[in-house]
Length: 615
Image 1 (tube, helix red, strand yellow):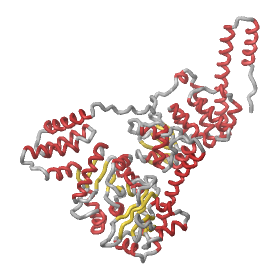
Image 2: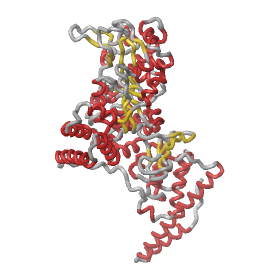
Image 3: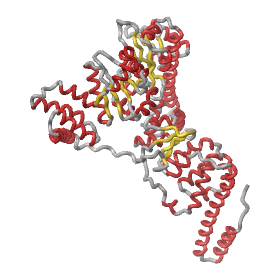
Image 4: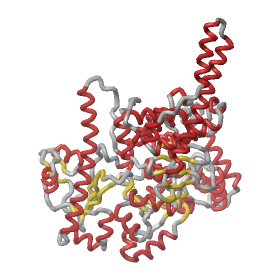
């Protein structure tokens, strides 16, 4: 991995990522008025929210523990990674290509830029076709796809919300449309909109006469498509999906996540369905926290994405053998992540779409509200496989149940489930615990030589005041903090400071360094991006006061700004002058010749003579 990430890449990531969306993906946040949001701090225990996000400055700050910064700082703190790794994590979220490697010549750099642009072209192509397919469905109600949608009783507002579309009943309509819009044949092939016959090399549309579902990534950008046949007895596949591309990795995608994530936080749960129509039925019934794995079995990465939004999952897979298998596989993925699991059990042969079509919202709500705990479902599956009338059959049932329960890392939850297993099979809890400990011991012996890597040291102690700052007078500290606030809010103040204060009169504390840097930025015409520039200094210092100032929107009333400015300048000048006098007096005490003493006396007299303030 190239650690030297170009500044233009960092700026592109920053421009694409909104801090509220980034943080909302990890913790619940609530609007606090204006352009600010509140949350319980994820970095320390608290009962009253003191974690504040400021949209205008794209920063966060906790007034409880003092942690704060920009989007990069948040990812560094949450994911326990350094700055380059935080850049890579955010780049993956917003679709920015980071050049890997140092380029020794302009040609290599040019090729890297081409690769980055390629992803953007794919995004643009997908979004363009999503709009085109949707417009075809809306404007041509007589087509078979539109008639099929009407047969499924999916209203126009739902079709619009999910951006449903219609692929033309043609072998080359998409190909011709793409070329007309300026996309090359290679780009259309890479996106999967068209494909080539392996034997004849003939080019044709992938999606023909099908209901099209655009697939969004976590940021809401179209990365691919899934297209369902409208035929009752199709000759080909029921669903045809886009291939994996540089912007579409199906194991990382949850269908309808951008539409569901806020409701996941509000309802403190997520519903995992099997397919797109099931998700749409759930949303129509009011369960707008529903999503589905995209074109693949439920994956560990998808579970980790959901963990950012909720700790409770409802699994809504089919009741057939394949659905049961998928549910058990989901247990293996989600239990180690400490999800609370509920199972929505459908009648044989039914699914959310079918139930909604027959019984509407009430019928689907009844099934969802009857969801059972994962152990109850697991017990039904496991117990019917074993003869519980024999000691060996009961032992095998316990062993199978424990294989899942032992994956839970929370001791209290694990203990309570063990007690439920003992009651279910009429076995003393100690016996079940003994079996659990035996399995854990065997597992531990397998990996007794493993040592996890140390986490990067990305944070400092909460009391992160430098020793030098402890020795400074409070009025000086207050003066620099006030001037930094004033200069961040008014460019004129930052410009005036360059004439009022020499750099050496400002301390080398984190706030002092930020003030000096802000003055330099103003002189260079870069005041408007000051908070972005100062964020790097703040990340390195991990100073709570600097974080709070950079996140603050406080502004002095107009009639008090000048008074505060002059008082702070006077405090800093007095401290600087006092230090200069003390240094000269110390030199005077050490002077040995008359000439040295006379020269130092002149310096001391000059320092004692007031000079007019510059305007």
